[in-house]
Length: 221
Image 1 (tube, helix red, strand yellow):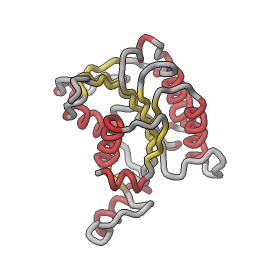
Image 2 (image 1 turned 135 degrees about the vertical axis):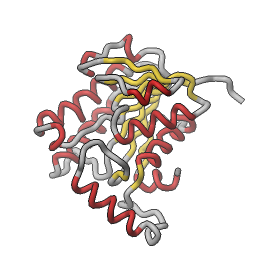
Image 3 (image 1 turned 120 degrees about the vertical axis):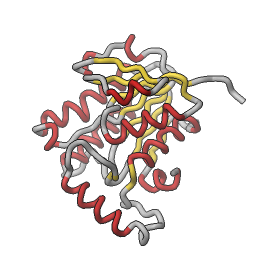
């Protein structure tokens, strides 16, 4: 039995998946310390004994010292074109910040775990999927100790902002969940299922690179 305790760094901690992840990391005995990078403090995180909040208005200002000393770095950072306000702003969040975060983790003994999306493909005609795919392609070029990428389908959970497509999918899923008991690729998953898969991957993945598709997310929970 190992006595090694892990230290986690999280960006995108205030979103649907990020909050679920922080909650599960707080409960995970393998993690002794969790730093969340946020633009403003969240009261709920103040109740977590392992969590420290690092305030930073612009995540592109993260530097090498900020990300040093962690065994695991998690990115749940992502937006939509509607929420971001434009394609350019969406790209700045989903690609540029995540790429910068990963750049800083090169040549460190840190396992990077990134939430992407089902359908991510740098050749996609869909802008959202294309940006996700471009980020994945870039991450694969870096000298990272270990990389995990997660491909969830539509996510079930309470968001601060309304997303019409996801809201409709949630209603459909909740009404048919007794029928949809078996996993299938496009089945919606909860933020808690995704967060659980991320924690399991952090604790068990030995491969230098692994993609967890939506079926894996369902089966891990």
